[in-house]
Amino acid sequence: MTVDEHIAILHTAMRVDHEEYIAQVRQWAEEAEADGRVAAARQHRNHVARLEAMSKPWESQQRAA
Image 1 (cartoon, rainbow, N blue to C red):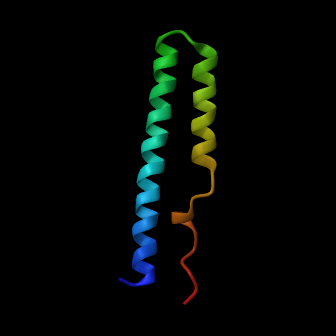
Image 2: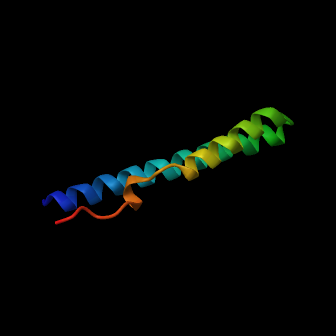
């Protein structure tokens, strides 16, 4: 396995983990809204926004050869 292949596998794993975590936090927000916990829902929505805005290594430029 080459270094680039290894990096691609790691990036895929990180991306999947990140997307699953965002989905979990969204679910928490929806559950909080359904329960009428407005402050908790707002905190979870803000958390989702921060997660979506963060720098993602798998979206960065490829390594220089």
